[in-house]
Image (cartoon, rainbow, N blue to C red; front, side, top):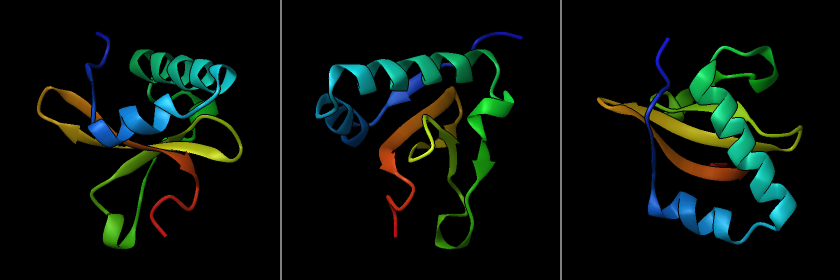
Length: 87
């Protein structure tokens, strides 16, 4: 299976730039894992519901997730933060 192409929104880049070095490492490690195997159990990849039904997320840690959407060429990372990013 080929790796998934990843695109970064300006919002995602801004949020990551505010993270400490350890958390940035975790984020990029999980992105790499996702592009290799998006169904990996440790990622808890799932489709969101309600008004976010067109978005998906996967876990970085117990309290942090990455929100993304599928685009024609791959995935677009939209946001990173706690599980209540869009509440």
